[in-house]
Length: 290
Image (tube, rainbow, N blue to C red):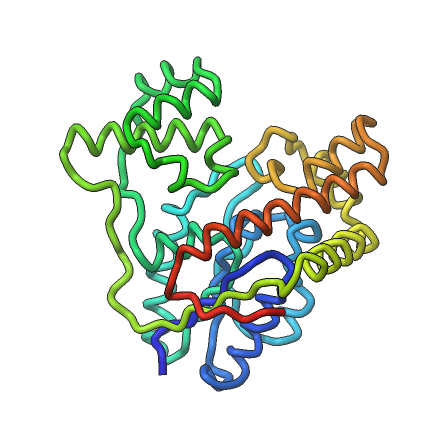
């Protein structure tokens, strides 16, 4: 029996359902606890658009960790995830239960299993100089430090100025101290790593379209209205999420609801394709098609 079960894969493949099946049946035998590894579901109040399935989780009575741990105006990195996940995993195992990591944020899982960025203190002087640069200039600066960096970062991070500045900060500190920028904090554990992917382009499009339509019917627009009424802004980290961006554009009358829905679907499809591109590099993943 593995010390740890990890379930990842493309969006809209039923990862949470499989994780619950594992928690309730073999190999966990009703003794499993879930640890969320979805970079959007860590945000409080972001429920419908991110697909938290709280009703299903509550009905299962399976404990789920790392849901709703930060507010939408806070940042949350893979370093933060690993820092929180490791002691949770250790505690679950001490109680003779099986930790089941589940989510499509592969960078979180990669850093958990294989190592993560070391803790580098903020360099305010460097940050102030970098904040004046465009995204393209930040990308060029980072590539000057590490020519392969554009293949090490996912598409979202590669186009996020805050994430680029942080990578430059870490890389600069690593060069000065002559140390690697990765280190593993998870003790050596045996694990089963499962990846779910769509069997065809058609099934991918169909699943994502159905899910977007379901979330709209459940009240996704009202959820966005509530978030804005609470004082959260479209520039906040949590609202830089597929679905929220399009619905905010609709509420600002920059898109019709049909345009917002179609762009939401298109962006989800593009994201799912990027997910599989990065995940395919991991030879430890046991793939299952849905």
